[in-house]
Amino acid sequence: MKKIRIRLLLLLLCTLLLCGCVRGGASPAAPTAAPVESESTAAPDVPTESPAPAPEEEVSVQEGESEKRIETLSRQEDIPVFRDMEYERPSLEEMDTLILAAEEAMDSGADFETLEPLLDDCFLYYYHYDTMYTLADIRSCLDQSDEYYAEEYLWCAENYTLIDQAIDGLYYACAASPLAAELEENYFWEGFCEEYSDETESIYNDETVALMQQESNLIAEYRALMAEPVVNYRGKDEPLDALLDRLTGSAYNNAVIAYYTQYNDRVADLFIRLVSVREQLADAMGYESYEQMQYSYGFGRDYTPEQAEGYLQDIKSYMVPLYRELSVSSVPYEVWYSELDEETLRDILRQSVSDFGGSVLEAYEFMLRYELCDLKQDSRKVNMSFETYLNDYEAPFLFVNSEGTNEDILTFAHEFGHYSDAYVNLNAYETVDLAEVYSQAMEYLVLSRLDEQLDEEEVDNLARIKMIDTVEMFVYQASYAEFEHRVYALGADNLSAEVLNETARQVAKEYGYYVYNYDEFFSLSWIDIPHYFEQAFYIVSYPISDDLAMQIFDLERGEAGAGMRRYLDNLERDFSGILGLVDAGGFESPFAPGRVAAIAATAREILGL
Ligand SMILES: [Zn+2]
Image (tube, rainbow, N blue to C red):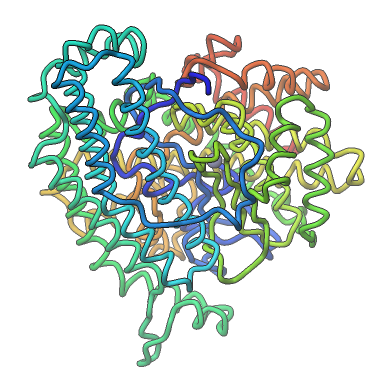
């Protein structure tokens, strides 16, 4: 047994959602054309391929405002392989019983030594709950037709608020007990007593819990609505997937637009209700806006919405012009997507990871030994990639829905960046911004070490694929962040389907990817972006964290091994925000003048523009 710092997974929707980050952390999200078998990834003006929600990739970064220190098991070597990990529905009563025992001990004047194991039991059960929730989620994602795990996942998600509320109550009880000071000193963290001194300040009261549950229900409603859309096409109802499978050319486009048109009102209505609930929640929790609340409470960011807004402006000034240039160049048509099977994919990563050595190689071997990754191409799998964490086993899990092409190298590298981070830091609390630095930097680093495994032309090709991806990511994700910012600034009372569509159209124009012929596509396709529904104000983290990843890439390009060393040196850490990494790692702040211009210059060089 050893003491480690872990955080309380404070509620929100957080883990429930394994909150999303875009595939590769970088591909243009939803309303763009699916690039896979198309010759161009820089073709957002082409709704000729799948309009399906972009392959969203996720990392289970759980929001939490505090770090907690409890007694927990260190990583064991005798854990079962993934398929043998047992699921059973966790028990709310068990949680209550454990908490009651700890509270009774405090009431009866127990000493610290008596109380400590009782508290451990509570927190370990809390993590067990999270583990069961995660197991159900992974298995449901592996086979969407599995009704048992779908139901278990929903059950765990729905009851998460109650578990968090119970743990929150325990904190207040600890802070009010005669042992409070001793607990702060030896069990919790500095400032604990102060933080939990006044129970009337708890974020959990009847009003907030009801609002959180409403929010959770609306998100579930969105998921259900979008899971298997049915479109009325030429007078006949048909599942969208089947329809798109058999159509091509303009018929395909028409079906896509039919889907967006027919779902517009329903999704807009749901979204407006969601915005309204979130406004009320922010108000009830004492924040001046939901945006403000997400920055501070939701994502624990160490920068402000104003700084982010400045960054978006720079993207408009420096990245959008490059994007426009790229769109009319031949570059996107010159890259190719070649077939790649799972075994080769594993070999390629293995080789690159061997170069890293140390804890990154160890993480890779751990992952294979316990079968903690799934790279299969399988239509039953959910169309996204993510990394998540099984607390009971201190084991990260990697899920990639492979496309069977060379681009899988980047997706796998991205998720493996998350994996290494979670493995090395035992999933310690971090902001999404920080998490996405490790994943995106891993993509660039793996890309830099493929020379021995792929021929020069292929390496070059992949580098250009990645750079196109980076430029698009900056432009699209910034525009989506702008959309959210404007929508919440307008407020639920001023929203309607028309206003939402118009806002989407406006940002598409301002960020340079609007095409007149596809007006409907650009004004209606916002309904496909899951982040708007599941994790509001998450999106801005993509470009901001990629800024540091690009700094690592630039180091590596300057001197082989330099970027990798910087990565390894800063992997194990005791900070949680992106500006913490800036300080500790000697990076430039993303908010320093000239950063976006510098990234655009690197991209321009690699793309030969
Ligand atoms: Zn990611």
